[in-house]
Image 1 (cartoon, rainbow, N blue to C red):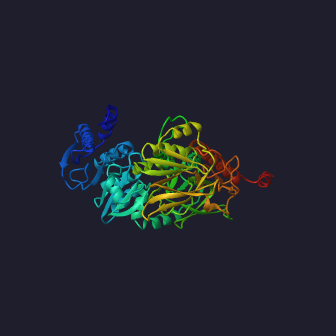
Image 2: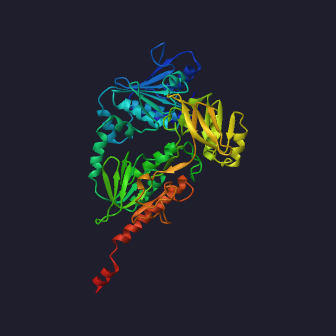
Image 3: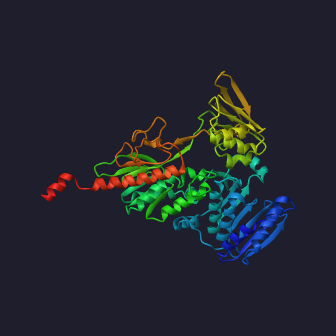
Length: 530
């Protein structure tokens, strides 16, 4: 099952096991079970600490396997073959169940161990989803740390009957004790905070007691991470307040234009960014959404108020709040989000195998999504507002060569239709003739660009008509001491490498501002010299 290279890598990891592992497989005579058995036999052969037991006709999902350790109460199971993006989840599950310590923050680990109750989690994932591993790995770790937490990760493509019965229309989708718990990317801290109802209040109290920063970075994407590193290297007090560290990079499938790195994936890059930032003396405050900004008062400090009710003060602030997927803002879109309306074709595409879907948007993102989906779904209707597609010609040629794709231009989507539980179609208006048309389908993938996360700054800093923060060549905003960088600004070309450069520049500009603000005035210097 595993090639020689993967076996060598996995064997090196398994040398870190400190206690025995027992894998319990629930199999039948199907092809998927045969594949799973091959994988588990390969794993068993790589370490003397691992044993394998095969069961048939038991009460567990088939095929599936549990990762256990004799003498330890661990309920962790994979229902499906954890390859693709989930192979890392498998490796971590083996290591952590085998006694290798997690790199999670000590205070979060203690929060997990202190959880009281019965928590039976089920996570539906797809092997092509780059958002799913964060959820799977977080819940697996919780199952290792706390015997009251049980988790099974389920491949939605393999267990289609469950997906349909539970109306799972996007991944990752999480159920807790049989009830919907969450959908979309969630990290360990987010899940724990949702379970531990007092966590937000405790975090707000802790933040409220912090001293003022020299540089406070708001946002944890590439721009914010670069700003934090550059500021910290100057030896000044640096903090980062981020709604989710990594930002939109976490939702990026493949990165092939990050200079010097031929290929990587968004979650890997985001993890590397956070690790680099934490190597310095930076106060990272995750899961903190900024709510308001107040210019410097008589004390010379800028205030950033958080949604939790706490506030932070700093001599300078760097805004790097990034952007999010733009919505259509039509009736039915919000109602059927995660019930057929989706924004990530890589994540959710496999759930629509053989079905009819629409892609909204004819730029590069939309056309690439349509091409990818055409290989999975039954039929794709691409709808573009403009009179022509805006994607690169090479992508357009590929799209037009596909037999199960229909392209509609000069069309405005006006409504998403559904039966109350899931999407059943959409309505678009012909912008030339004015007629309305209904398309019967089961999924709508929205790919119409980005919207800057700057609503909370309206009336405080100057924004462009598109909502972007207006900055000069140094990253300075209209408010003294407040700088900005990345996709939330007027700097053109929203690229990771550009955001990093702008974040670095903003940090250098903030440091220069601090030097000049603290320098003695010329008159005082002359008087002192006299």
